[in-house]
Amino acid sequence: MATTWRCTSVSYLMRLAALAFALVLAAGACSGESSDGDDAVVGGSEQPSADDGDDSQTTEPESENSDDSGEAPEPDDTAEEDDTAEELGSGDDSAEVGGVPYADPRGGIFADFQQGIDRSHPFQGLDTFCRSHDEATAREATGPGITEDSIEVHHLRAQLEDLIGIGFAVEVGDVTDMYERLIDFINTECGGIRGRQLELATSSWSPLAGDEAIVTACVEATEDRRAVVAMNSTSIGGPGVLCMVEENDAVLIATTGMPTDFMERSDGRLFSLTQTAERSLTDMAIYADQNGLLDGKTIAVIGSDAAGEPEAVQTGLVDVLTGLGHEVAVRETLLCDGGVTCVIGIPDAVSAMLEQGVDLVFPTINILSAPPLVQEMTVQGYEPGSVSFLLSDFNAAAGDLVASKVKANTSPEAAALYNGATAVASPATSNSWSVDGWVRPRFNELCSETYEGMGGDVWAYDDPAERTPQGMLVTVCTEVRMMARAIYDAGENPTRADIAAAVSNLGPIDTNDMIPASITPGKGDAFDAVQTGSWAADCPDPQNAYDDNNTCWVSNNDYVLVGR
Image (cartoon, rainbow, N blue to C red; front, side, top):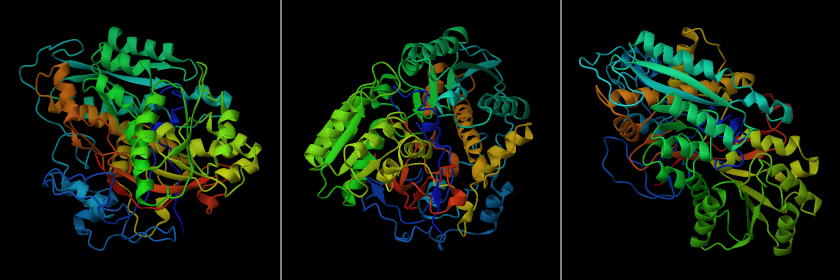
């Protein structure tokens, strides 16, 4: 049975809030199965584990264990499956307290990745969310937001509930409560961080309010609270990001796929679970080229003039395609007119596509703009099978929420046209418990156990109806541990600069579904692997469909490492 890709990547949950800005996810806040194939690499060299030399090589991005059936492969017979692996997979991983690596039963790049994680670290174990540790003996204030007894941290929250009225709301649970309870666990159960308590505050804004509201939240965090580290799991973009990291020297850990320009302007203070906007597009283009998806195609790239996006699309996609020897026959930029729906120019763009005979489209536009584009294509004469679509994490296009709206907000003909769209993206598959040999990722279990133990809600990992809030929780959990681990690593009396540097040097990190991810100097975006999938307008497994419209992403379970 094919697995379905029911991602609730936070990188797209809140692209709604940042629709006029550069993209999310993705975290991804979704879960699932993957191939345990070889260590193939897209677009560059394989990432060595922390204890390996750099003996990487470039190979074709095909998993030797994947096939054409859509079935997930059996677990790697070479993967370590001793008693420790069984304990870790079942939730009892006390054996790893001394630093024994987690034996990922998926094998391949997943098992290799685990060898680089120090499980003895107070904020990196899998037996508990954090461990008690020695207090700093001579604590002193080192700058704004850091006293001898406390450190200011902040939660920046987009009010997703405000999207109900326009039909794009998603139930993600009480995100503020998730941050509060996990940080309370650190303060009460682990003594804070080296004796300092974490002081958490929250600033919220409506995703429909525009730039000014996000900047106001930034001012509350940085000028009123002097936050040292801010976290956002519902996506953030544009001036609000630069307000945090460029103007107020705060660290921001987010899920949005930021433009490379933002990363550079942050001076090492901006971090995201999702690939940068350019890198998600580049990985997709290189994969498509290596696998013959562009051969003989007449290509169109459709983007928008949302802040930062024209530059990202040009650099990350158009220039890369050209460099690979593929002509872009149509390059159109839709106008947003200062709003979040970028649709001005769609009829002319489609006319140009028809005139040039375009049969492959890269739609790098947001959730509110994609349905009108596809609808206009059917109106002007495109028929199913006459054109294909290729998507990445950019603007969260490779997410169930975005793709599902093509069917929900268009005609049956438009949905049929979009059916079979191909994605190259980081989020894992969903409903993976239906695959023989699947073991729930221990980090996901740990986050749920910790939150439930602090009085939080419980969501079933294997219930499609509860996967979205469960995924959001693990994304929040990822960010909180990144923050805490960095503050610990920054030393007994860290400065703001020390903490920013510590985030940059985290190395391998735990994320939703334990997909290989790392933060290193000069690389502020985490995910290190991608897989492919195709969108089904009518899910082949209706029981595991994303929504009542019976849509879903069907994963190919062919995870490969991506080059740097």
